[in-house]
Length: 370
Image 1 (cartoon, rainbow, N blue to C red):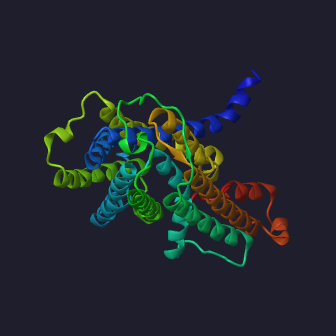
Image 2: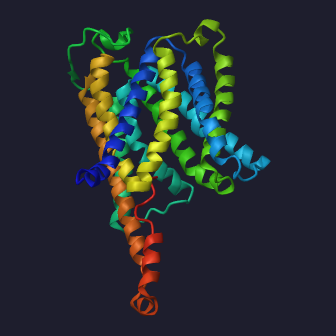
């Protein structure tokens, strides 16, 4: 009987490990599909189509009756939001993954909070107070992330060679297996494209708040974005890939990668992340992000035969350091706001204990994850 409370306490920790393991699987399977010759744009279309087919019945069953009316203006906003944050972001991500590695894709996700915060400052949705310690911490975090990205792009260093005689998916990346990393220009190009993808995704995170004010049904909002992104991805894919053979999935790693990314990543992690944020707050979830890099690095060496270099290890560590600096600054600022919102001594004499408890319950317990 005493083990049940202990399991309840451990559940959020086990859940974030599962979430990051799922993301690591996404990086690995996507890279394996591209190594196997799958067209990136076709992959993105199938991924979004699978996600739409899976999420649509659930959202219609849960939110259709109580959904607010969808105006034409709101529909246009959701259309362009899907185009910028999903279609363009995923297409750029796929291109960058072809040029680089699954490890780099996992590493650059650690700079997403810093990118999102920087965009929020530019759009005047967030204030950077340089005269406070938390403000300096967030600025330092952004600079560290920039340094980590530059290290990943421009510095390779010694290679960590591990024995890898068999590729689990049956395809080898010739640039990596023959003992050298992608050519310098290709790798640098891939790094900047990956950062562009993260920037597009960060802009999507920032702008979502505006759109959801006029359409707060989260599941239908997600379904509509997946559906519109499927149409947009199909238009791009059919324009760039006319070979019918490239559209055939078959019972292979292509189908596995598409189904995994479309169903498991889009649907399952959406629910798991919402549950973790409800239980422990968004910062707790954000601080688990480096686990995906650890899982991906280990698995990519043994499963995809990727070569890990000192530069990529250092760059990943810098990105993780920048992530924690931004999150720490954001957390401290939120605590300062919470303290300033507490009632004064005069107010406390007027308010009874029940009112104070209601105010404490309504006060946010953790900062928003930007």
